[in-house]
Image 1 (tube, rainbow, N blue to C red):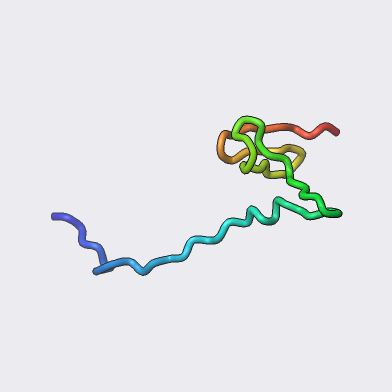
Image 2 (image 1 turned 180 degrees about the vertical axis):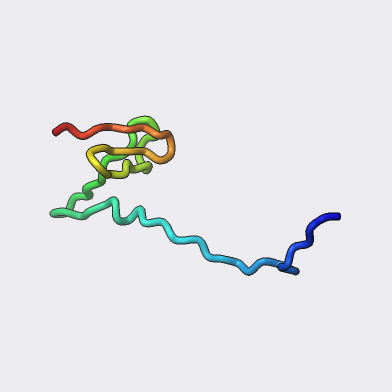
Length: 67
């Protein structure tokens, strides 16, 4: 016998969190400054920073910081 779910009907819609790509761009003296992007994936895919390395979540590229 199959186990029946306690929830009946449709599930309530949940809103997805919005993208925060605007935090990766900075405007300094009339020029746009971008954070470092992934060399494999190309522009638009940014590297996350943490604990002495840069990491791409899409292709798993890792670049270690010197020092």
